Amino acid sequence: MTTVMLILVLTTGVVASVCAILAAFTYLRRGRDPVAADRDARRWLLGVAIFGISAIVLRFVWLLLL
Image 1 (cartoon, rainbow, N blue to C red):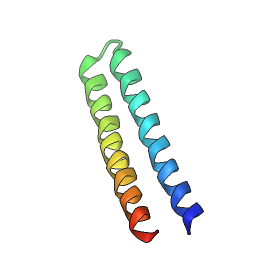
Image 2 (image 1 turned 90 degrees about the vertical axis):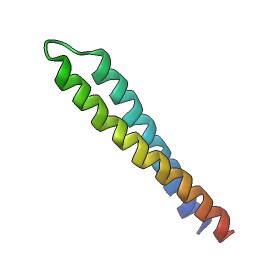
Image 3 (image 1 turned 30 degrees about the vertical axis):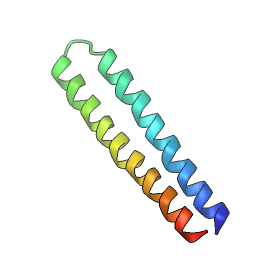
């Protein structure tokens, strides 16, 4: 059970990090349509929030299961 929770916590943390990098990339590379870039960056930041909170919650669940 410990390895499964470790894999879940690490995976959600890595996905949150990738979402943060992609949010920064889409925001900084605006091109011709800055409104679309802002909208896309907000969507990636929403993914950061969801996966980041999920990683924190999974960490506490893991501690409760130990």
